[in-house]
Amino acid sequence: MSSALASHRAVLISLVVLASGAAAAYSQDTKENAKPASPPDSVNPKATFLFSDERFHDDPKVGWDGFLSGLRGFEHFYNPVGQPIYFETPFNNTGVRLIFMHHTFSDDSTLAGGEVNVAAVQARVALTERLGLIAIKDGYSWMNAGALPEEEGWNEIGAGLKYAVYVDRENDFVITPGVRLILDSGEDKIAMFGTTEVSPFVSIAKGWDRFHVIGNLAYRIPFDGDDGNQVFQWDLHADFEIAPQTLPGFAPCVELHGFHYLSDGTRLPFDVGGLDYANFGSADVSGSSVVWVGLGGRWKLTPNVSVGGVYEIGLTNHDDDIMQDRVTVDAEFTW
Image (cartoon, rainbow, N blue to C red; front, side, top):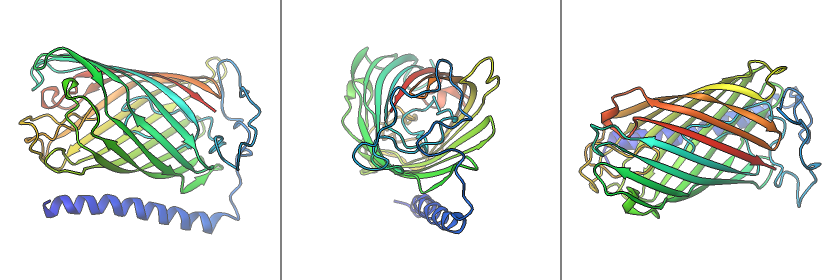
């Protein structure tokens, strides 16, 4: 590994440690003045929903405090829709997320056009109020790319942990670092040319009345630098609840995502890296970047159910990687 790459890794790891330490220290200094906007076991009164503002259960204590119920009081936020694998919400809850993506490749890219459709299920379990288990990558893909035969098969699997180190309900502010492990378990026939990788991340949410912002920083580090590329990525989601009286629970959103390849691999002689779909270990991607934008929205039907959708399109040269455009839709069911 070059000194530059080692420096990038050290910076991100330091960021996780410093954010955790700073948030813990700030929380200690201000805990006497902190007043939650609503009791942790109730739905935040600022939240609106299309059908009902009542949970389907009375939020009973199961086992110990926080188990399954997780972090209450942030029900008025809207979770991101796009880039669902690595854009992790800072909120800790228990639930299942169903995802479908239709992704198109540029005709002039290395994959020579075509598309991939992905159906996946994510699961999250709140172990305590702040500690959560996340299972974020699995599913099945149907690929029809110009440079590859038409195939279908199973994707890689991945899971991790996250911990909300700072929670301020009064000011709608949450900081949550975590770490994911993606296993090289997908099928090569659907271009899951991957490698086992670890990715530390920091996710932050801040709200101002009906306007909410969620951001994320992550560093993807392959166990084998020949089989995978190192990637630094960032994500930003912003939404605004435009008409809570006439359209309760609905907020349009804009999302921005950036991928920056920091190393070359030796697995494939490609000049595209696979973005969030897979880690190709391409030999000619170091120093390149891909940025794309998504426009859409999320609609919260009840405190336990929401649906979302975004249309995403590349802002950088579509031929430089696999992002021409895509549509992502999901349905979230939470405890």
